[in-house]
Length: 306
Ligand code: CP
Ligand code: NVA
Image (cartoon, rainbow, N blue to C red; front, side):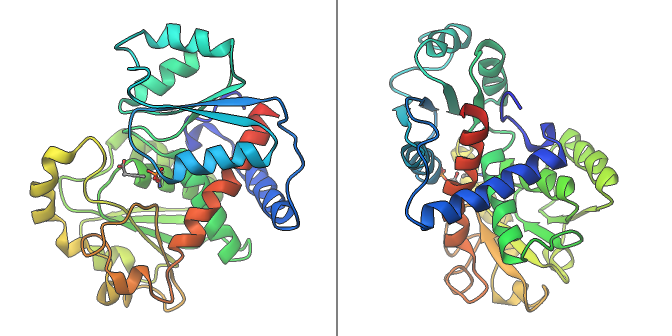
């Protein structure tokens, strides 16, 4: 693996190895600290959008492994504005051992990976969020004690970047994926087709619904995300009128298995896509899920930079 741009690019074995390593590194960290396997290594973190989890988990992950991370915000380098992406990539190559980038256009992270010789990690684009998908797989894997093949994972809400990465990681690992989204807010057709191809290989299914209750029926995992992603702010009023039937609340959750867990990549807009009672309820995995970003990404850093 040279870069980490999309879960669909990885084999099932590569994803499984990352999960196994994440479990080991998490245990090692809890037992007194990780070995400094990235001593002397540096990660540049390029952000065109805000972040809490991605920034802090990558920065702390590098620190735990003995390396260093540096934050480069939107004011410092306007990707493709102050300087071309090709030039930025070739300059960073001489300073650091890896580049993590959170961008608007997915093409920009692809361009960075094309020009940089050092590994590039996609920290979220308008198309996908593979770091989230990988750590979500870790959360599901831990909760269901590795017995995840055939589980039903339902995503409720906007067919966005987080939904796409979740669909692809489910398909890779043999979990059945369902989505309930409002008409007109589907995942892109090409992402669905790719998901269906991967699902056919693992013997899992992908189901698409415009009714949240049908999508959630008998689910083992119920997942949601914001109705308005970063960069779509001017559509938020329109979306707030369309999405309320897709709120994850106690009534919707009753359609899932009683043992189902609830997930959200965060930040949550409580009272919109999720209620307080669900976010803070007994089925919520929201905070273990957020904490797993750290452990999954350490596995990624160890693999790509180690
Ligand atoms: N889930 C996630 O990526 O959070 P941040 O936007 O805070 O990094
Ligand atoms: N779909 C959200 C995820 C934030 C982590 C966004 O892109 O803003």
